[in-house]
Length: 407
Image (cartoon, rainbow, N blue to C red; front, side):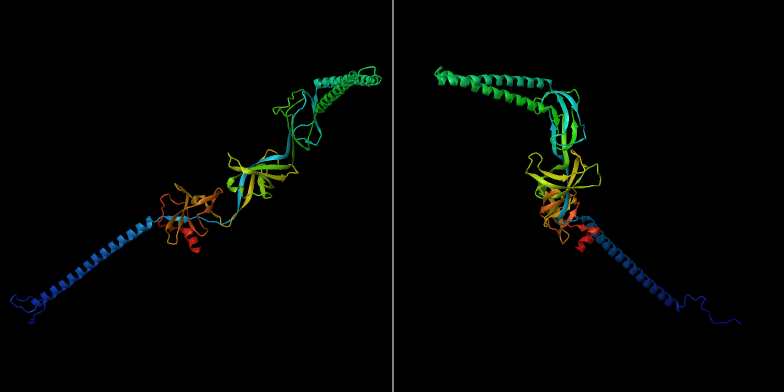
């Protein structure tokens, strides 16, 4: 028979109030709990978003501030020591003599050409001087005439001296004869001096070398008219140079002139011997600075027994200059030139910049020596931007920061 016990799934009578209120109470509590959880989650999300936004704003400000700080590198600073100073030099033979003609005529023959070594007194050329030869003959004749007149005057004066002793003539007449003899003696001396002068000129018909050396120029040829006026515009027939020893002239700027001393050695380089250097020694200096060049003329000397270096060469002379121990040397890229003169940017211990005026004592090309305004331990900004101002905060980058930390 059918079971009369009611099942849980069986519908309840609407009029019964058994289990329905309990089910309604449980569902409402769960809903409230879920709502509270959802509200808490939403609050957490909102708070997290606000915190994240605040942190992002702070990070953005910090990043912006960091990016506004310029990043700089530090320049390398050196103290005293030695430094090369290279200057152009003018090479000249120790002795150079342009040979001019002392007599006029025609070049009869020349015996040496350019590049020929010659000895002192060696004949370089002969000049044919027909006019001078005739003047010599005339001078000889004039001397002979004067000597003949002198002999006659001497005989007459002696005879009249005897007549005066015998009272045959007056003393006045005897003195006149003695005076005539004196005049004739003077004429003889004058004629002899004129002949000797012409003979001395005739010796210049042979052009000779004044010293041993090399013939560097020849500016004449056989048959050329030689006109000797005795002036500085006379053309030189030959040039002889003694190149066994050389003089090298260098113009040293005033800033370095005090560091160049007599006896100091230097290296000489010439283009024809690339990679080779020759030793020279400072022999003299002008002890004066040229008004136009602003430099002091310095003479160096060097041996050239093998004749490798030629007179007139262009040379580069390198001096080894010793700087004072207090000298500070920095790259030229660290210098700024402003309205008040050269300045450098120095980074302090707090990484703030201090703009310092300096005095440049020497310009060495890629580096400069600072006479005052800088110490060897200062941190100098290399390639400072134009906008860098006194008191700016900077950041030292890369290897410069490590170097600064190590220092």
